[in-house]
Image (cartoon, rainbow, N blue to C red):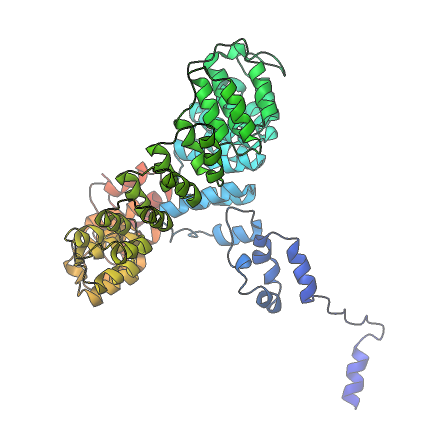
Length: 553
């Protein structure tokens, strides 16, 4: 009793009562509905175990999408630590930088630039800011422009800014365009092609703004476009036919009335209008027809472009009814694009047939339903060619169909040696069960190049492969940057050579190089690994080679 009284006395009598439990699952769901999925994954579900359990197993909260904004604290925790990317190949590190740039979060971009440990080349620098520019992430675009500036080559900076400007113009991001031009100068980057990009994206207001910034001389709203010349006027009209509505297209044409357009230009307007995503595409086609010379109608090539549209069958039917002609190129495009099966059926019903190369491309691309449609319409199909191309493309459903429905034989002497390296485990098992004479060495090498340990283990067990007897197997695993696969091969007697070490350097995987060094792999004495890393601008590998004591020249 005395102890209880002492405990009560030790607590202040005027202490506030404990707060009510308000972290209710219903409220948490409401919070989540206002947050980006990355914020839910990286922040909200980490509040406590109950919240984590609440979001477990839900696909939308299963993984962080690096191309979308992620909380900087979580991004930094994952990628800012030394060695955070040591297990990634150079290709994966490049992907990390590209996706982070697309997210537009500058803090994360700074971390990624430091973490990836490589110097992007001119081509990569031109690609990196495009997604950020199209999304309107001005600060991220400027940060990437700074990255280009750090190389100290001005024409690279102009090329990067020009690429970003095209993406921003097409998306109608005038603020991004203005920032880029103010940073680099219109003289260096702004071309009529950027105006065309804005028009093709359906952004006439941005196009007008860019016309007023042209370094050759500003062109105001409603002014004649004659100073740009016939070729540029034709380019702008073609872009407007693709992306803008009829009113904007007609207005632009009036500004070019005193410009003699190049021969055949009006035909390109028809093609662009026929594939336009705007609701008034039919009206634009009719307008474009009015611009054609008397002998310019109909045109076969006008029917190639619309086959990639979701409503390709409706467009083709309308155009065919107007007297346009479809040819082999049209049905080839319909087959290989795989966008509209109805469009393919329409063309086949009119007696058109694809050429063998298009059929093989469809097999390689896994267009099974399209191939079935060809067969239903009596198209001659080379079962052997379909089977081969499906196998090389890793398209098991098409491969199975070619064998079971077309009568192709997996025992074809060409199948085993040529396709073994391309097939994944499921396809290999299917072929082996049906008596295909698989080339054991090619199966092993193909699996090693893909870093596919299950397929390699299957080859050893089912095909009685002996990894130690397959030439260059360890080299292939090193080129894939797979430490797991190299360790597995090492346990089974595969040897390591100097070329193995150089292949690992080419993969860009620091962990692979470190593992080889730990295993006592001999290092090239001619400085070859340094040359490989230098060619790729791979600073992380250069640092790793130096730390491991790899000999230089």
